[in-house]
Length: 446
Image (tube, one colour):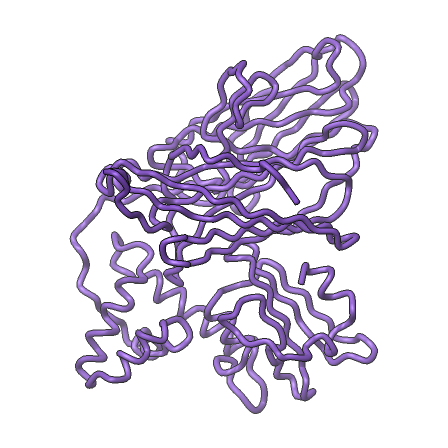
């Protein structure tokens, strides 16, 4: 069992928005640093927005108890560790929490040998029983005998700190930013990384920084920055902060290059910039002719209660219901478009284009339904020509909620049926394992 991984202390920083499904989410990331003798220190940082929890008054304080269940699996040998910790979130008031956009940020550390691992988080709201899940597969590499960088850890701030705090390392307090989101109220991109196998001399090495847009085009370069070799220390450390106030919203990459004599090493990390729009009066729901073709096809994303209520209404009542339904899922109310509905329509079109068979439209297939509900999977594996098995596909959603789905062309007609789901929201066949090779469940932490 993992013991004493997480302390009860909670630090509130900022809020991160959720998306189309209307389900709350939280963020976590993995940062890997070489430790000693091929052992790596793995830091797992996570944030929980206050909106995800249900608060009750306890002696004049708004308190939300919750449980954090952590499952850690070595995918190479099947060994696993797990722990459940009960914690509390306390906020001064809803108004203050909303004004300051509060969230809790925490981390815990593991020491890992080289290999493939899976980490899974379950956040359980004690007051309601609501559970939120996320997982990620990651690899820990051996330290090779050449110039190498650790992961670049994104942060909200980095400053000197000689205490032994939970976010302190090498004399620095590094407050992580697991979401990788910057923008309004957070325009300084701070970072921390380590450098291994510098030349054993007194010649300074150089660091070059580049920021790339989502197409890989370099839009800014900084450096070179010259640094002296640390005395009697085998690891070099670099930190910095870039002002992002002039950057437009979008996806970017920070690229770092180290030049030490004839040796070079590079590292990259992705980040995102968001700008909150001024709050405007709620717009009047309006649907284009194309949107009207799709806006009532809500059976995949509406709750059972919503569907039952919708079906009980008259035609005029259904029209009003749909206006409110899509207004609630509009991810950017400041624009005239309904981005939530637009994304939903894109998913339907993609499902019909890629998952249709001669006998059934893609919208009505299992793959189409899962795609429409959860979007593009973070990992999609296709197996077409394995002896003794019909073609099958594996979809994993690391960023969405740690979900895994397996589909198989059981009838051989091109329609892949859902045979396994890691979430009880979808069906799993009792004997699904016989349709895939024996190593599939192990490789995907099932």
